[in-house]
Image (cartoon, rainbow, N blue to C red):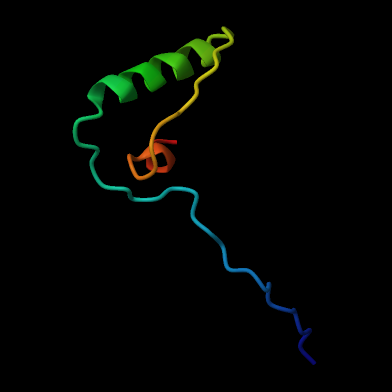
Length: 61
């Protein structure tokens, strides 16, 4: 007899999403990249994304 293995209730989710191209956010992306590089070098940083609804905060994060 073959052994029955239950299937997972969840399907694997990719952590990499295709989000297209950012337009007009070069400065913001450069600042976020610099903050990440500082953090990777052991220097603490705090980054806050603040703004009106619908301007791309979630997509930027």
